[in-house]
Image (cartoon, rainbow, N blue to C red; front, side, top):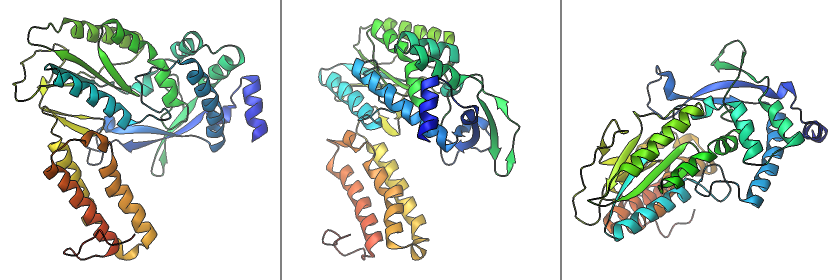
Length: 369
């Protein structure tokens, strides 16, 4: 394996057998209509050795990017020490600081359509060369990586014939997400040019700006027009139907009525931002309600399989379905009301009782797990 990887890196050639992917459609969210193909995410299953090779390349290119500060500082997707929580914290903090100063904040969530699947290989190679500084054999390796890629789709026992993959980066690969982050590097320059705050998580982009009663929205409108033009030139598409906007107001003041030409659905009272529901007053009640409702639903479902699971397996499923939801981006819940926080505590207590078999009226804090 070491010889195969070293030979590939030294010659700049990726073996053809490493470039075939079996694509398995995975439903994006539970409950979506399975008859609508856009509700599925095409996950590429690649050979094990190809992933080892990609990991070796990933480690080297990340070291190069970190050493030279080439990554967008406001990109939290698929980076070490970054996550959806770090993206949430930065955006929430900026919004709260602006609200404390007495200004409204307009948040726009841009949604790209099938972004990973439409990446142009020639443009991406140019990015790698001009923006990242990859040259010579290393650039040849990436050129070989994109050349002659094939895939077939498998659903159950049925499989399609193989077809050429002429664009896009494989979802499910090691390098795919990083390459996409590098592909959209110039987008950050557009936001900076218009003095619009932004934060990325892969292809999810959050734009936000301070809005005072007499302020013009022209800079934000011009910024979004430039973004649309750039996306079109780079074979990416902004999904207007799923692009959402919400305005936050300080204290008890009324939110101003704004008209945004690039938002077809108008301003929302609440939006889901990277899995966290944000309401116009940032009370987080709606988000907590959703977490509590979903957690109790899964506890009821798990109670049916509890008799057949061993203790260690029960710990795993409770963590997967319950505590992971309680932990997800819980930093943004800092400062919520004690009554709202108590509801989350009740869920945690219920999960602990479920694991230990403690009766409902017994105190759970004295039990060890």
